[in-house]
Image (cartoon, rainbow, N blue to C red; front, side):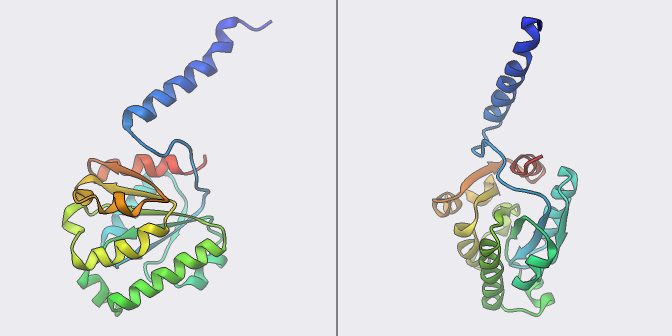
Length: 189
């Protein structure tokens, strides 16, 4: 016969995990995404490099292509699409793409991901500095199509992400360095 305390340990562990998750304030209560992931930019900002670091630290295997076309998703074998959302005039110029063409590319990639049954996670990690007319075009185009969105709180001061996440779960973090935790928790182990 098992020790009664040993039967309670799994229950205690689950309660502890639930308390920890609620203490952190994450709204996403269970993983939704499957590894590996495919990472692309929506807006060609350098924020994609920060998202790469977050994914590396979280141990999420991924393939990245900032200018990925829709046709790249299926052969990649990825199960989840991760979007680094934030516009950059310099990044668009370096990529040789207009803002409108970038929006069309992103929409096509997202449509293909949905067709393939992939979960879509959007990250806006640039905070208030990465908001403005240009970035907001990309935010408006991509965020409503995501299943889960993580945003640095400063970037949502006006509540735009909250409004756009009617169908998606939105989690905010105080600073960029904390965005890796909800990102890691979004993926099934």
